[in-house]
Length: 511
Image (cartoon, rainbow, N blue to C red; front, side, top):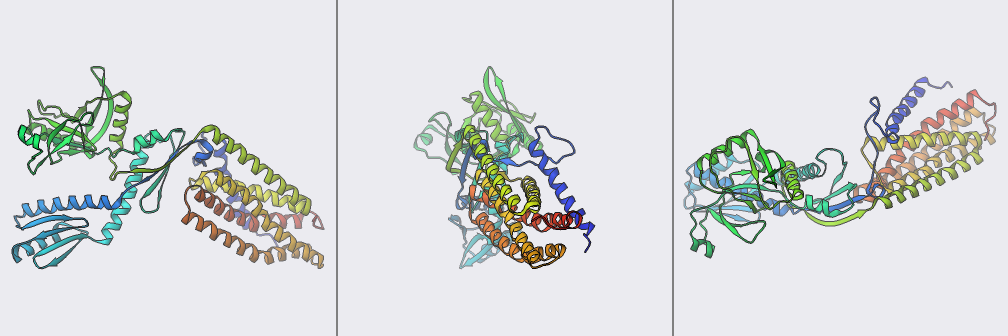
């Protein structure tokens, strides 16, 4: 039997591609013709901070119902449709009517104006709820949006390479290398950064203010830096979504945050300031007033300034939060940990030692037991390790200490397949089979056992990835990649090398 030249070409191209993705992991400067993907080091190797965040989707859904109620009330008013009462339930909206005509007219408005809702009727009452599909879609979008904003806050310039992973239904794991204290992370991620502009209700009397007897369209809001309060209109004039940029500046040697509005935001701001000259408006962050300047003239330039009791650090942080955008939901830190760079260096040294010892022992055993064929198995093992690093680089995985354990385990598992194959070949040679036929039968008969054992281990790795978290997932990914790459090396590269050796070199296999 001739060796298929296409088999040689495919195997050569596969390992050449692996080499291209392998090299960047060991170069300090980027080479233009090489891929930019690199294997990232996890926190336990590089040092840094990790926080696990949790959010309350049910609370978020309640806020969506509040917004829906406001939209329904607004649409019914503009359509001049009457109703007796509209009210908010924990997970629905109720509307009571006096007549059948009102109910039918409201149903038409709701069906025309809103998607993703179910309308139930009982007597002269309608109950509006979101559809299961809408809730599922909202949950997925919330998770994606939260992860995106977290990434913007942490990695604004794209140089930090954080690891941000959703965990389960309502948790997000954030790992940031290079930050030794989780407090900095918590400061950035613990604020929703919901920016709002509201008018101050200048018509509130001292008696109303003292008794907190606000009109239905107003409420008392606290200042961020003091216990004072101001009566504000409930209507939100503008939000952080109207901002295009925010930067730190100095005003009379005091740190301030200057902002630039989007085109639409600038038009809204110009209209609001034109209509309310002489009135104060409150700039609020997460429900608290930062400042309440007086509108002295229409502001038509599309820019403004937020002043307050800022330090340079707090002003920079606020500008960063405003640029990244408001989180759609409040995040609570439920777990935190930090690892110093010295501990990470010790872990890397320990991992190198473990890998070197494992590789050396496997090399001694394979060459001592199988001579030249053992040497070929070591060549295939080196190629296997190279392809493992390449695959991990391509998928953007992070190497952790459990991941190194997975690599070390793969070193032993990879040659296990060669041991099975070589023992089969020895049996055939002892039975008087020719060397070429012994090679063919050895690989063919051992393949089923190799495949079964690797599939079993791969299933375990998949289960660990699906149901594990953090370090367990890192181990599972490395193990799965190692199984796939070692399978390819055993049934392709090793077989090719042994075939070539059996045909071109000795008359009798050195084994």
